[in-house]
Amino acid sequence: MDLRDAQSGQRQFDADHWEVNGNDFVKLRHITLHLATLLTKIGRHCEQNEHGEMTHSAVIRREVVPDLVIYALQIANLLGVDVEDVYKERLDSNRKRHPRANK
Image (cartoon, rainbow, N blue to C red; front, side, top):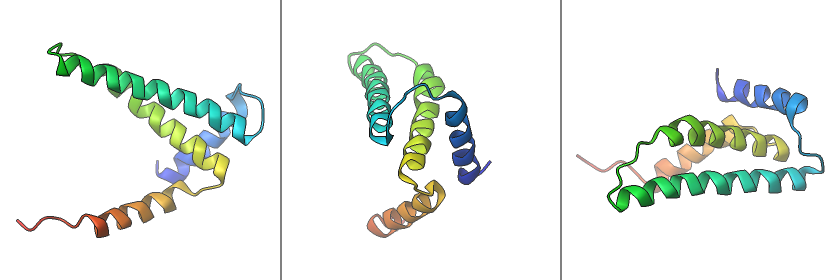
């Protein structure tokens, strides 16, 4: 599956299952709440580890990573963005800003 397939699949999934009613702003705001929850999960993991409580990253692997992909695809769909194109553009931009160190 490439990014365009994933974006199309997310669009169809949301058409069938998205329970948030309202305009695109309402949907974007709702996604933002979910993103805040994900950041809390990451923050909790990092804080616990910094204080010597060696927690496993299972929640981040199982929940945070896939949800970040879902929310990125949803936002792209709401804004009419081709996620594959902007991803490639961003990688190119990052390469130019952060060239590989000579080794």
